[in-house]
Length: 216
Image (cartoon, rainbow, N blue to C red):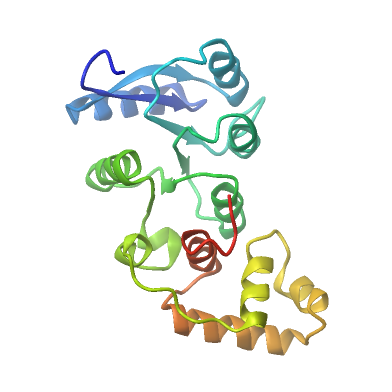
């Protein structure tokens, strides 16, 4: 049970100036407080292991850090503390990294130049609803991700393709695994993008998670 009404947030980021500024921004929102800041994933994990009963509503996790980076930290959380909600923070929108963070349990992915308004909306949404991705990152509309729209009927091979797309395999490797030509795989991809109203592979991964085609 909470000791006060404010949501408790942890920041894991090696850039001191950025994490201090982020803490001040979060404090200005009123309903949140930063209870701890860590410079890398290792010291953060040490804290989590030593403070198993700590009240944590949200973790803001930098992707690029020394000692233990955001992806390695996210993998540890998936294995040992999947109950904790995480928004990944990064300076780049590399599709491969975003997919890895999502499939390892991140509930959101924000670029560090995100506006304060979007940032506030993101932390509210993840804490209250458990999910937030901007259209810029996901290639799909937020209301599409969060809506209760009915599941679209997919063919068996489309489902197999989606499952492979949620891994680290390239499209060429997926074609080889499915014993299909790269051109056929390109056709599957474009057809699914159109059918599901998405624009990127990240959007495909988010759809798969939402509709339990894959589990994270």
